[in-house]
Image 1 (cartoon, rainbow, N blue to C red):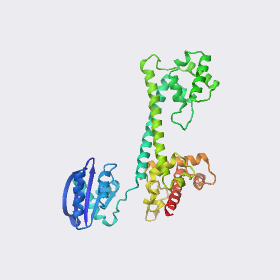
Image 2 (cartoon, rainbow, N blue to C red):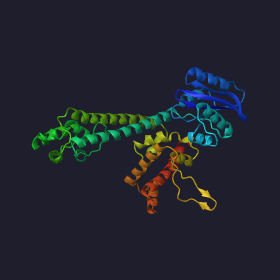
Image 3 (tube, helix red, strand yellow):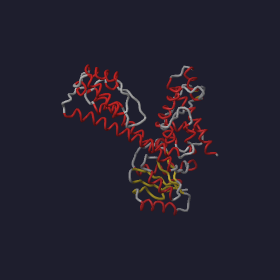
Image 4 (cartoon, helix red, strand yellow):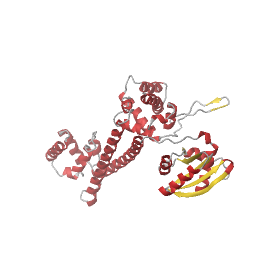
Length: 399
């Protein structure tokens, strides 16, 4: 048996090839992630008479070119969790870290755990695309939050209190009442320079044009707020208008990008067998369904519901020593934080909608009745939800 340890870094890797008992087949050497050098590595691996297994760490996106190239050439590749490799490295007394040393450690890990290595199975393209879109969706959500805070800060300078007066919700990204209003009246001075009657007429005309309710009471409330408000930035300053309108523009562009990403995710998710089943689960809507599928991926890669729960990082490992058995255990949080957050959103939806016949909702209520904290009860509910998810989706692929 021959173990090929690859320490992957950006655009290059260090390769070490070992046999049992420390026999060096090839000392650590560097290769770049180019087709010619990767072809040389694949050719050399296939020339060995003995069984060869390639071992590498999961390193974000860096290892993907090496992994995909070797899998195309039907080579056994095992991708190891970096935490496992770190713990394996810690058994060595003398510490040291270089790419060459790391490649030797990875090759040795392959020899020591030869019969526990699993050949990496590539996910379907649709799951890969969904996962990438899901991560980008999360990225733009963070940008949206930052952009909203930026706009709120500017409005505190120019129109204090206006955000509270114009609360509205819309499923369309291009339709946001606060953004539309601020774009038209970006400073209280633009309101107070008009008489009350003029502003009411102006507000009604604007509301009709934008498709909002033409409320005279709302217009009067805003006019009174503008008269009593104290802006701390002058409307005559050249940068004031630019900063407010740019904040609105950026927020609107992010909303459009989010809508575009979500529509792509929904289109891809609907092409999968499990979409209908997932969409019908309580607490899961048109937005959460593709995000949930994107993060979980192909359910067939999990051997049980417990494996899915462990992947989410909400498993509570047992702790027992002698006569002591730990009962106050916490979730491991060693898993997908994105899946935990998405699952928690599902639990919040369940608590809001209160589906009286749903098993997960009743389980959350039961845990709260036992005296569990709200968050603890929701995480317990998520545990049950993922077990049900696994069973239902697994059933789809059995047929």
